[in-house]
View (spheres, rainbow, N blue to C red):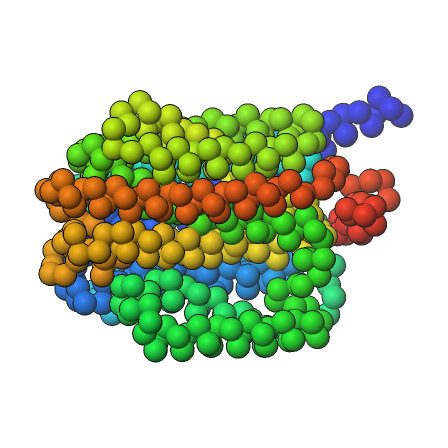
Length: 523
C-alpha cells in the first residue's frame, strides 16, 4: 500500500509546489506593477503636460492616485478575508490594468485625473492581495525563502523605474508608460486563474460600510495634509487645520464603530497582540525613514558633490544593491532557523547607523564614504522591509491575513507620507530664502522639498551650505525615528513561526491558542 501511495503523494507534492510557484510569481508581478508605476509615470509628466496641457492640475494626477491607494488598501484586505483572496487579487489587477489603459488613452488632463483615480483604486489592492495570496498558501516559517525575491523586485523597481520611464517616454511616448502594465497584468492573471486556495470560512457578517467610510476619511486627511502642507497651503492654513480636525473626529468615531462591528474593516483585535502592534509601529517608522531617504539622498548628492541628476540616481545604487542582497540572506536565515527578532534588531541597528552617518558625513565625504553610508542604510531597509510584513502575518489569525497585510502596507504608506512631510518642513526651514525655487519666483522653502536639478547645479557656496544643513537635519531626524524603531524591536517576543497546519488543522497563536485553519475546499 505504501508503494502505491508514494506516486500519488509525489504527484500531490509536485502540484502543491507548482501552486506555490504560480502564486509567488503572480504576487511578484503584482508588486512590480505597483512599485514601477509611480517611478515610470513620474518621468513622463513633462511630456504629458506638453501633450494634454492643464499644468495647473498636474499635481492632482499624483494626489488622486496616492489618495485612492491609501484609502482602498484596508478595504481590499478586508474584502479578501471575507469573500475570496484569489478573487480580490484578480479584481484589483483587472481594475489597475483597465485604469492604466484608460490613462494611456486620455485626451485631456481631466480625463487623466479620473482614470488615475480608477487606477489607484486597483493599485490599493495590488500589494495587499499579493501578500495575502502568498500568506494563504505559504506558512510564515517557509515564507523566508521567497523574501529575497520580493526584495529583489522592489529594489529593481526603485533602481530601474526612472530609467525605464525615460526610455519608454523618449522612444514610444508617454502613453506607453501606462500601456506597459497590460502585458505584465495579463501574465499575473493567467498564473492565478488555475490557483487552488483553501476556501475561507463564511461568517455571514455584513460589510462594515460605516467603518470603511470613517477609515477612508481618516486616511484621506493624513494624505491630503501631508501632500498639501507647505506646498498648496501653509502649515498654519485654516484648510489644513480643518482637515486635521476632520481626521481626528473620524479616528475617534472609527474606534467606537469598529468595537461594535461584526466584521470590522480594521479589526482592533489584531492590536491585542503586542507583536503586531510593535511591528506596525516599526513599519510606520521604516516607511518614514525610507521615503525621506529616497527623496533627499539625490539632493544631498547633487548639492554636496555637484553631480548631475542621473549621477545622483546612480549613487543610490549602493543602497538598493545592499537592500536586495541582505533580503536574500535574511530570507534564508529565517527559513532555516525560524528566528526573526534578531533580523529586526540588526535591521534597526543598521537603520540607525546609516541615517546617523548620512546626517554627519558632511560635504567633505568622498563618493566612497557616501556609498558606504547608503549601503549601511540599505542593509537596514533590506532586513526590515519584508520581515515586518512576515511578523505582521505571523502575529495575526489565519482568517485575518488580508487585514494584517493591509495594515502593514498602510502603515508603511502613511509613515512615508508623514515622514517626508516633516522632513520637507525641516529642510525648508533650514533653507529659508537662500535657495530659489526651480522654475519660479520665491524660495525653495515655499516649495517644500522640491528643487530643480538645474538650480542645484548653479548654487552659490552659501546656498549649497544651506542645502547641506537641511539634508543633515533631515537625516538626523530620521535617525531619531530609527532609534525608536530599534527600541520597539527590542520589545518583540520571539514566537515560533507557524509552519504547515497540524494534522488537526489548527495553528498555534502567540499564547498557544489554536486557530482553526480554513477548510480544504478550493475557491
